[in-house]
Length: 99
Image (cartoon, rainbow, N blue to C red; front, side):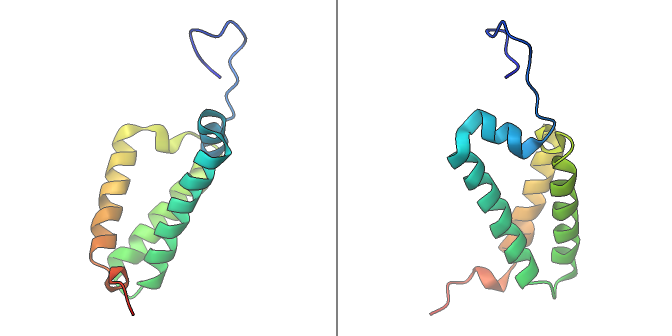
């Protein structure tokens, strides 16, 4: 852990998902990965819309990059990504609860 209150050498995992696991525990990491998987599956279900295909590619690419670098820790990138994902998922017909 990289902290000013820690007198040990900093431990940085260089993997965004492992870093979330170190900071929030296994449950927090599972929740984060579950949310990302739910987003990807919803985008894939409604792949007839070209914007959803674009967002699926961008999200998948950023997830792959996050395994080697802290790409989602950049606030500008993260807010833009999740704002566009909210827009993409709000237009999906799969969001309607079916009987």
